[in-house]
Length: 41
Length: 306
Image (cartoon, rainbow over all chains, first blue to last red; front, side):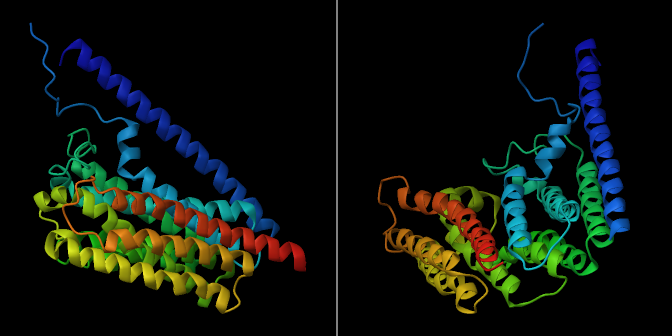
């Protein structure tokens, strides 16, 4: 693997990890909100 | 050293490739009709749960889209329209696409059941299986009626949105299902008329490939005629007010008018399929406008008689 390919691989992996992190964070917020709504009901 | 432009199959997959697996453009229509069904339904749903329901509909559609691309990767590689998808381009492993699709599908059904209700979740599960198994695996490669029966998959979202609010299946959400069901064949066959050479190459028995242009054009007309009374039915049974009724009459009337030149055209008129492209473009606007009218009608009637 050339240095360029390695850099590209790292960039793609970083992008995937950031996207996954944001999605997980979004689910944490959503489940918190659902729980609060269900408790109030 | 020479630089070539040959594609590298070992390219690392990006988050955009996963997004492309979910067919975002199809999803936008699914989200819209699902949201419209939710907003037009009688009763109340907490905004957080309503948002969750629409999110689950979108995730379910995305999961089904990913499973569809996983199954059809070889077919997609043979068609110009689908050649740039991540799997035929080798930007994603097939197994990863399958796992992503299964995770999205299972996650969407589970969250829908826990947060919103298990009837909505069951219909969502049925819609995913309908698209990913019944349509993609079984019908699409076997019958030129694939679009008619497969259109059922796209007809589920307004039904799911409605049931998320009411918790029961009544005539109105079934009519919304029927509208999208009748709308799908003329919408898709108009497209298939101007991209049919691609389907023929991939061996998919689309109506124009198998039965010919003439039969396809006649069937487009039949479904456009059927769409008119079915789109008016919610008004006739008293499920909506006149705003929706008049909008449906105008929109479906225009749909029928635009289908006439498609239906009665002889093959080989050299103007590059203009009526077919016009009908296809209008069919997308039609569905957005009809469901917008449904929601507007609901809020107007609620506002006036509250």
